[in-house]
Amino acid sequence: MRVETHSAGETEAAGAALAPRLRPGDVVLVSGELGTGKTTFVRGACRALGVAGPVTSPTFTIGQVYEANGVEVAHLDLFRLETLAGEEPGLLDDYVTPARISFVEWPGAGLPELPPPAARVMLTHGGGDLRTIELE
Image (cartoon, rainbow, N blue to C red):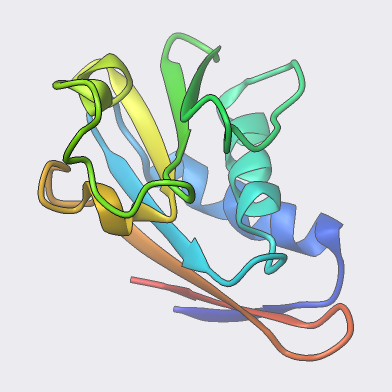
């Protein structure tokens, strides 16, 4: 599926459209260059899942866990990691569990450790506020 958005609100709506298809244990890989709207997309999905508080990029903390409507949602950002070698063993285990829906921004470093994704999302700049979101 391919969607074009023209605002942060539309990018959040694209994330919200994915949310009803997700179940505990699902992992969503979210890729794209800096500033393409990865966190905005995740925020929209989190809102649709029932997360009420702020949803911000966990770049420096690696991950955050949010309470939603009957499910926990993990939001990871692996931007600062080239590889998981040298990191705490089981780093992802604190976030990616069969009981949680997990969104992973910049998933490259975690790919060898991550379970097969339920969805892959790629965001690209289209100039100005235009974003192209490809979902597989």
